[in-house]
Length: 234
Image 1 (cartoon, one colour):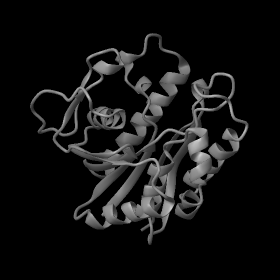
Image 2: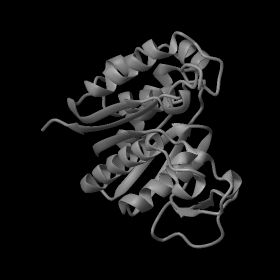
Image 3: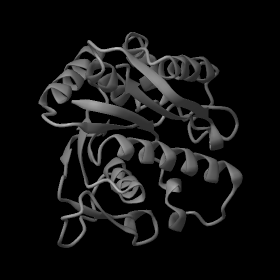
Image 4: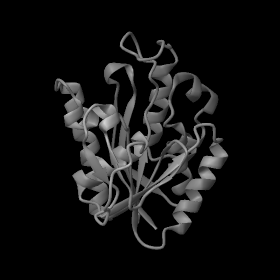
């Protein structure tokens, strides 16, 4: 059973060793993500995670941020041994880093094809929830649009703020239906790869009533970052 869910982005800037100069925006995003992960651990020290990508990683894998400039090593469980995988995908690296920060025992990462439909994402979420035979936390990793304003890594798009606000309202109200209503084509055009992970969350939450403990939208450096914590209503 999924006993709590935490939504976070997965930029490399979360890892202090990878940041050349600390700025308030970076510290704020990092602090919010670590707090959400710690909240997840308070509910369960065993996690499953979903993020954009392909395949599965873990639960006994190790990786390194060497490809992002510094050889910061992470593991996906307390029982991981052996050399780190230099090709571990970024969301799995961040999942491992957050696991270590929050003191979780282990995390298995399910990477979701960014072209999956809302229905396919929801079906995966339902399956993951059904397969959880003990209390687990669900870590949902995904970035919002990278087309916000002049600082955007991608070409600025005037539709990005409204899309991000739609996501934020859905997360703040713990509304699975609103997450499933996100337009996959628009998300793709805006570079919001986190859409698939959020819609997996919607499927995993199906059939139960949830409430949002925290929800925050930050847009540093032209990218939308959502941080939220959901828990089921008794």
